[in-house]
Length: 253
Length: 98
Image (cartoon, rainbow over all chains, first blue to last red):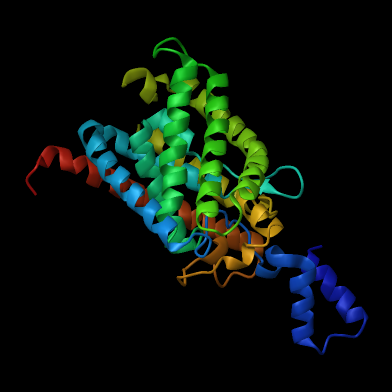
């Protein structure tokens, strides 16, 4: 039973059903933000968490990087890769909905940036991830509008690039074979990197003390990252077995 | 290729349609930190969105509402990403001219 449901039963038992306002206040204080808002699947930075300079700054960086990325991708992207981009986007959107429980009544979910980057290359992955984030913000209210640039920077730029280059570095030179362990570590670390960056943005905004938020974010994302690593490793390993030719890193530098 | 694209989309639809209702509703990493350190209340919504919180409006059963939201989201994401890919690739053949 949810916290709200439990409180409703108790409230009715003590005969307090008339005072709707008091009941709502009790729900708010006893059950806290999560149950009060009834949120599920809200996971990206919402509006209100970052201050003006931080969201404007991150938006400018993201626009600049994506503009360059689109130009770079334009020269390389082949027509036959487009359906694969779309499938990847659809799959990552779906996978992001699946929050898995970690320790301490907290959950995590796949970001998918490294999955996309290993298969499509980092710039194409950035474009795919940005597409997903824009759809989530505009249609599902997941992630704010002002902070879209920050969410893009963390999950569509830093996460794929960090994971991609870490993966390449850990696997050694291209062609030396596929290493599932490298995929796992790259995906795990990429989550910690994105979480640390998000913490810095929250600290810069004055929303919360930097040291506090950094340790909190790294603590939870240490576990969430393990989930990211496992899912990425399983999916990449499967695809490598059935379609090794799809792999960006093994064919194109 | 076409068959594999279909298989991929089908997988995404199955994940979004069948697994999503069973997803954990515990707060995620950011939400958890925001709650623990008391800044969760700073969040607000700027837009009225068509499918808030991944729940299809007008569907009472929460599991079904989530599944429908997921299926619609997968379809839209596939379509938009296809379009975006096409737009990016088109720049190449046309060169500098519009």
